[in-house]
Length: 268
Image 1 (cartoon, one colour):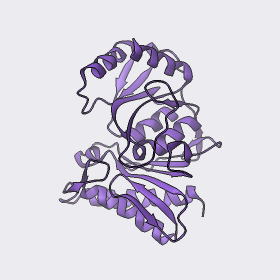
Image 2 (tube, one colour):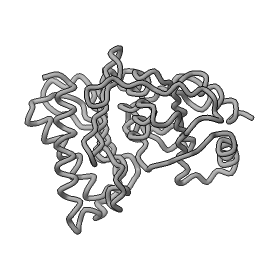
Image 3 (spheres, helix red, strand yellow):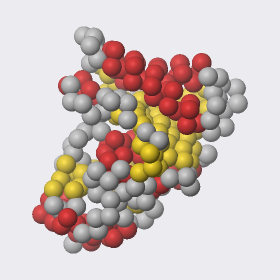
Image 4 (cartoon, helix red, strand yellow):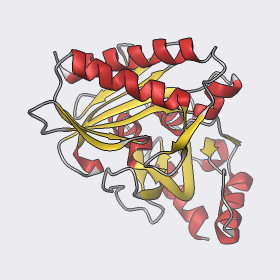
């Protein structure tokens, strides 16, 4: 069994368990603070448990890195890293907003640039985005590509402004509101990266320094394999350690030209 099959089976299990649990009264129960620093809800625990059970049933050995429980070794021959956000968009799921997903990525190293396979499943409708290094990006077996929009004035961009309290950062991002055609934020960054990869939106910016590798490990590979680009706020290649504690900011765009325009506005 290859990683594509393993990741898809794990995500399917998450989809079934999460959507079944969402009807229960204790789905929103607080279980404490996860390793990533956010509150772990009962529904997050259920999602992670579904992945761990799938890996165990398939006799998969790996080093699991999860937003909820941190780093744990699974199996006897763990060499590769499985980077997991079991439920991205927890609040959406609990509030009935139909935009949440499961994100899984495989890395050869402790760093983001070691990721060579990634899968994100929309847990509402089962749409599955997948990429392997050097082999392109796919949505439900159909190859996808980013948009050809290069002008910021024609671009539909995503902006995550949640918990942003730095006045200077807010001023920079307000400029993007002026220049861009339209802005959106749907509440699940991994799935929004998939929207760039499939040409639905043209860019996504998160300047809060709150994003962890578990949030974007799969999505950043899917974007790049679809022809897009993802960089730090200073325009350098985005790379970071894939531990749940380390955080960053990023710009993801459909192409280099659009990325340059966004960087120019942020530096003004």
